[in-house]
Image (tube, rainbow, N blue to C red; front, side, top):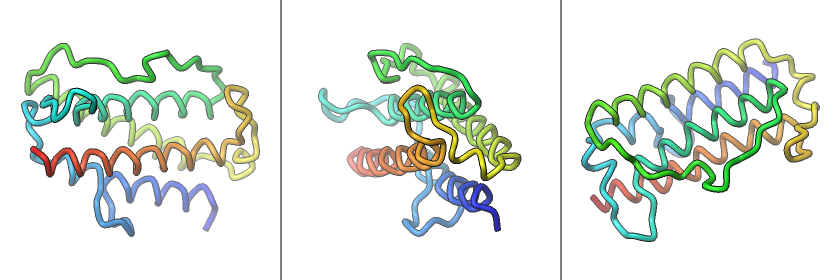
Length: 152
């Protein structure tokens, strides 16, 4: 099996598969309402919704990088307040997360393993590190979401 296929399987498993850690983004976010996602547990913590939107933007950022773009990360690091706390807006965020998964799956299905050695001019890491980094980023924030969900 190619390395890109292994990475793709790993990324997919964390979203809605059967990962070693036994929790996924899709299952964890299932049945979370807009009200719950918007709830601020502590003024110093991000909400579930803010974390989900942060994940989406970082997924887009890294995907654009490995497709050759130079990206400037904004000072807010993609943590922005939710302006519309409706169920429809929450559903839109969940759909955007699902779409980001589809885009990554499509990208990795055609990715040549030689591309892992290319250097990202944004941070001087190779694409292998960037791609594994976004997976690690998802898992890190998945843990936060799991904890926040338990505190609701």
